[in-house]
Amino acid sequence: MTQWIEAGLWGLAGGGALVAGAVVAWFVRVPRDVVAVVMAFGAGVLIAAASFELVDEAEQTGGLLATSAGFAGGALAYVLANVVLARHGARHRKRAANQPSESDQAGSGTAIAVGALLDGVPESVVLGVSLLDGGGIGVAMLVAVVISNIPEGLSSVAGMKQAGRGAGYVFGVWGVIAVASGISAALGNVLLDGASPQVIAVITATAAGAILAMIADTMIPEAFERARLYTGLCTTAGFLTAFVVERLG
Image: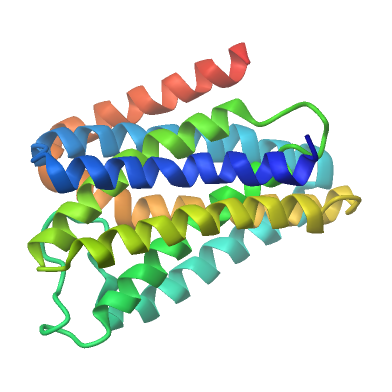
């Protein structure tokens, strides 16, 4: 199979976890406490993947300066974009409550959709880039994406449904994001094929910075709202799980 097609399929699989969570949340009422625990666990998995699969490898191949610049730039870019989207109604896009309806804030539906896309693109690009060394997909990163996306789909769709958004909007948003995830992974693989180690390090670290900022700004606050004192324990368990998978893989 052509490598960029494989990258696209892996990206689509990661994005498909969002759709899976959305389907469950639309037809089944999942307790918010359960969603919070899984989201905290997923946050820990993503933090570990960003640390060992992305930042550490970027520093080893591209150097400390390139990695640091990319990491800081990714976090800054995400935060700035998130501030803009929050002002248009996407502040609580991962939450099972408090999402505004279109009547509450005009344009909030578009902002939520763009915000969800913003959250998913960096991790998808990384999946595509991970194939470039010929060693196959980064298993720890793929597991992290899937585990974190399922509760994101569960929580976000519960909030969308409560805000009165219809099935067409909900599944349209997550379907488009799943496809966009596949395209992002494929493009990351094609555009960075043959790039220097420094360039790949910057891109990888940029994605890691954006992912970590996303976790701190959206996932952990949603998890803490319900899991409270157990959030730290669940996040630690997720981190340890991803670390073990990465070392055994």
